[in-house]
Image (cartoon, rainbow, N blue to C red; front, side, top):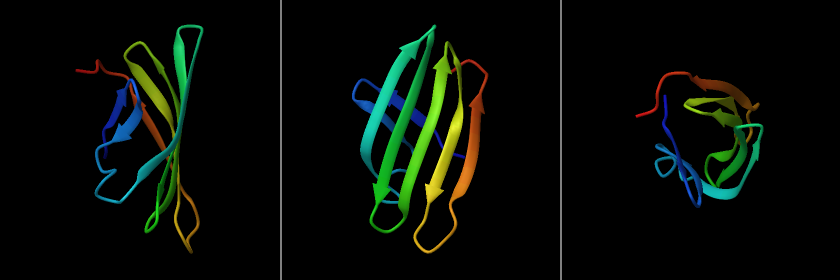
Length: 85
């Protein structure tokens, strides 16, 4: 389990530094009351992580694809329906 943090400059996740990931790109777009986002992180040692999702009010959902060197990509789904504190 990890925690996503959204800031004015982009997004980060709690274990980002632990695995050596640096933000490569971040895009967000508001549409019909939801904010869709895509964030790409790269690590020399641990490959590439691509987050895609949307935030609607207090709800967030999306996917994470982790492309690791010499391994098949791993896909994750995330969702948070409860109030974010």
